[in-house]
Length: 383
Figure 1 (cartoon, rainbow, N blue to C red):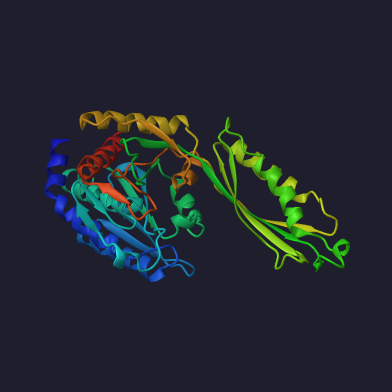
Figure 2: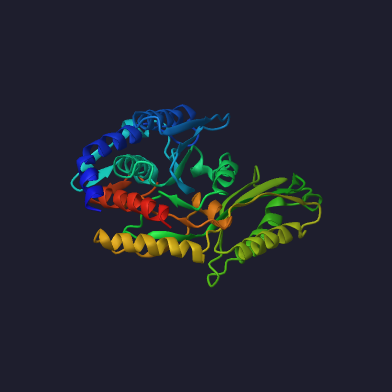
């Protein structure tokens, strides 16, 4: 461990330079040029490590390209590392608040979610090149461009490449107290569209079919599907309808956010939403349901906990107390864990303010968290 720490401490300022270069690129999910610029930085950095890395660009039309990097090892088996290049921030954000260091924190758009995680992957691999050469399992990395929009274009890639892996390590941010993530809620997004019949509210009210009233009947019941005991939450977040107060509204719609803890609950909530939507309360209306469960839940399975226990022991070597956390937000770990592949998330540096103007990374977490990842790869190669 001392050798790992020594190298990472020496590389600390190089780490910050790479992190700065990534943060200072606007790479919102819809910014294809920006995401591809981040990809180019990653590609060039790994090219500098030499010929042991096979780099494949996965071209995309509706989002930025994905990149898959393979490092061949001499030990049988494969470890998959996941990171995403996109952020939630709009174009022009970097110009307003570029990378900066204040005290023991560094700030910038996407710095903790998850450009620091990408940087940690690179420097962990650099240390492995120096200390272990080929004496590890094959390491495969996927950096996708659409995680913040539910990985709608990269999910198939992630699932296909993970199926022959021994385990998956995901570099989303560590929790503020240093915990790693062994379970995440699944996420769903539904759009309920109602078609009614317009008419004049004064002279022909009876001839109309009020789409808003129909929608309200459904939304109250759908909202009541929230069950705090099981961890299932349903939030009616958006509603739209009508054109004037004196017109019976012909069209209305609503967008609903769903969070679930188990695959069983995911199936149950999906069936119930569709059942409620199919009920007709106002004669002359019809309903269309769009969307569904976007990410399956990452349940706290035994195989995930075993990975955590290994990380915990390594953390003790580093003087860190690492617990296992659950979170309501989804990540690409949800996909691999749902396939039954041992998955551990939240291995990136720690920080806070995710998706806000105050997003930051704790500078003192860079070296120990990257050391944790490096040693974890080595230990997992021996098992």
